[in-house]
Image 1: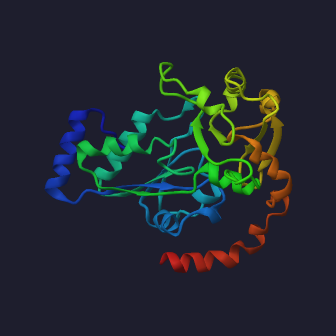
Image 2: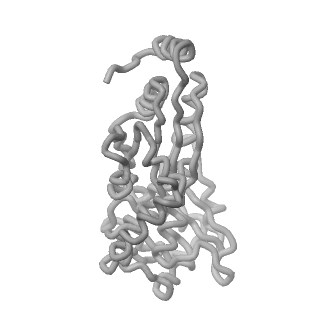
Image 3: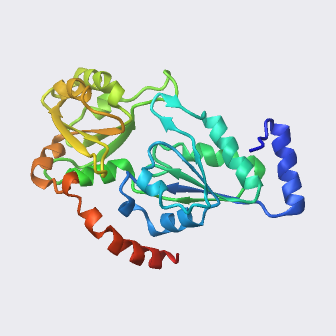
Length: 287
């Protein structure tokens, strides 16, 4: 694929595109936490209609497989601590394909506007006046907690919930740990597995009890899902046995997983009924 290497070349390309044909479009699509059944109808329709799908590691293989064989798939391989394609390169891929008049689906795990850098990618389109849309997805905190039997809020346990990223843009940005350590709310750390020791130390230093219940949800909503209950004081020890992607949920609501857990990956009823559901979903989506 020919690449456009400079801002000047991109500007020339967009001006030529305006003179000749209509620009394409970029749609940020939330793929949800992994289970294809959690896709929205609009997300499924766009996956089926896309000329190009740009996706990363957090999008499950089952969801990528929903794309037609004619769709160009571009894997950009983002994961914690390493980008197969840097963010600037991803932005350029979106611009280049849209300038060719293509419908580009930027498929992101969870919701594109929750720790997905979706806003940054849309900002990169603005200088070229490329049209865009956003299709929300079920964010990992909601999906994984539900499949683990953990209500993020509960009248007897938590009156609020906070989503926190385990990775900051720069060392100068600081989390308000004193605020996080207060009682009666739930904390959900995205991409925090490698920082579990620091999370524990910071929360304990700001007054959170070492006995506070915690759950690590590994590969939530997938057939490989595991829920690892522990306490704050053992968080980093248990985290050594977990694999990415994982969420860390902290708060007394995590104790409810023992009573409310319903998802048994080894007896996944989705397999049994998947063929029965595909046709109705596709019909509703207009496929």
